[in-house]
Structure formats: C-alpha cells, structure tokens
Length: 416
Image (cartoon, rainbow, N blue to C red; front, side, top):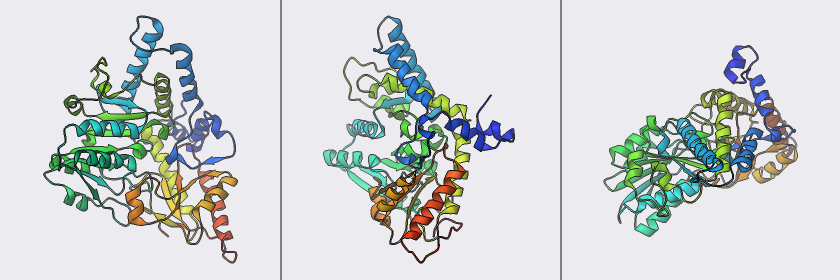
C-alpha cells in the first residue's frame, strides 16, 4: 500500500495519515520532542542509516578491482549519480559529490579562478549564506578580483534592479541563493540566471534551502553551477553539485593525475568517494519518492507554514515575507524585550527544538536588516499541524511570562 500524501488524501485519509506513516520510519520521531530546526539539518529515516550500514557490511573497499565487492561499489556510484541527476534535473555526468556544499563551493570557485584575471568581478547578494560569499572573497583576495553585493528590500526579497546595476563587462559570476537559509525567502532563479547570462557571466546557485523544500530543475532555470546538501532533506552529510557539462569540460580541475576524466563531474571529486554515504543518499531519494516526491511534500509544508504563521503570538516580529507565497517554511522571529537565546533554551526545556543565533551565516542580510539575535523556526514534511499549534501555544505563554500583566493573544497574519 502506498504511503504517498496524494494517495492517502484521495482515499479520504488526509495527509495526517501519510505523515504518521512517514514518521514511523524515524526512530528519532518516536518520542515527544518536536524538531523545528530543519534549516540546521533534518532528522534521518532509519532506512537511510540501514543503507549506510549495508554498504559497510557488503561493499567495504574501493572501486576498480575485478571482484564482486568492488563491482558493487561501481554500480552504487553510478546509481547514486543517476538518482542525483533526476533529483537535480540534469544529466548523469553533470553531478559532482563532495564533503558538503561549502567544500564543493570552495573547490569549484577555486577551479574557476584559474581562468579569472585581475579586475574581474563577482556579484553576490545580501541574501546569501556565507558559504556562497566567503569563497569569492578569498578568491578575490588571491586573484585581485572585485566582489559586489546586490541589496535586498526591507521584506528580504532580492532587489533585482540593484543586482542588475552591479552587472558590467567585467562581471564573471553572479552567485545567489535559490532560497535564504535565514528567512526562507525564495528568489526568481530564472530571472537572475538570465541577467547573468546577458552580462556574459555564470549563474552560480546555492540551493541548500531550496532543495530541501521544493522540486528542482536546474536546466530549466538556466543555471551553470548549483550546490546543495543531502542532510537538509533527510539524507546523510554529503554535498551534491551540478555543473553544466560544457562549463566543466572547459575547466582544469585540481586532481590527482591518475584520476579518470569521465564522467566529467568526477574530475572534481577529490580522493575516494564516501561510498557508504552514497548508499544512504540512494535510500533518501527512495524515501522521498515513496511519499510522492518533492512537489507533494512542498504542498504539505505550505500547509504547515500557513498554520505556523497564523498562530504566531501577538507582538511577533517576523523578518521576511508575511505569507507562504515566495518562501519556504523557514521563519526568523523576535519579540521586543524578550531575549531569543533565553526563549530557545526554555522551548527546548519544554520539548521544542529551535535555534537562536545572530547572523545564521547570512552576514550581509544580518547587517542590512539588523535583527540582532533571533529565533529561527524551520519546518520539514514530517512535522504535523498539531505540533504547529502546540508550539505556538507554548511560545505565547513564554512570551507572556515576560510581561506578567499581558494576556497571551494568538492572532492571524504574518508581519506583526
């Protein structure tokens, strides 16, 4: 029997039945603790952990040898590459695996840097996680390049007009996030890729948050490089990148000399691949597919997000878009006069996992918006409507405790 949300909804069971079935596949979700920390890393289904262990049990070794264990690993790598290509919307040979998104970004940006000249320019945005900024700043310092920062509007949406003003004849890369890890804001990736290409530049996309919540098609947006991390969508700690084939073929990789140049993505994979994590990645894709795929999960997460937004207590300062339109279910909030670090600790004591932090690595946005320190609430498909209600009830009571004469008041809406 299928456990997809669509199938169970059409059978009049509703999505809650599908989510309950999905949650049963996670040992970590069998207790009462509520994980609302998805931007920092999701929980992992037991079948993913089992797949990792199975590779260790049955295929521990390396590729390139003429016996069964080695050949099983070769099949595993090919299957993981093909499954990742389907997930990203690209071809088998355009997939690159790495330790994490940040490591991949440093590797690939450094490789491109071999072709850049003093005075060339990189455009990044104030919406970016620093993993899509720091590599360019370091490269600029080494190669005498210039990094420009495109601005955002007060609601954290990207200012496309300002980005376009930064483009010029020396622009070589436009680096931007498909969705912000801090506020959940989604950008018009196709529009930015088009602007980059009109300027003769590469479109370089951080999809870490977007890949965790929405279906991807890197070819349809016209991207040249896209990076993401599997541990944000219930997988192992593994980085995945797409590189447009013609672009990758034009680069001279940093690599050990005997390493094969085929498939082209493999040129940029340094050292032995983490085969056990590729086994876990395959199980992750199978898990997501069993629930109906990313489009189905995105629809459910929008319902969760709407419930969360509608239940935020009066006085909530929400940084970012006030509805689920144009965002993923990641929310950054504050309460005047209430320390977010204290709230995070008190929520943890009451069974809710949310972060309190300053920049959330979005240094440019933090400087631009100035939220100080704030709570970040991040949802995943395994969360429930009941958890949204219970969290907001506890949050309202905690906030009210800082003003003893105030009565907790739950209101509808987004920006307060």
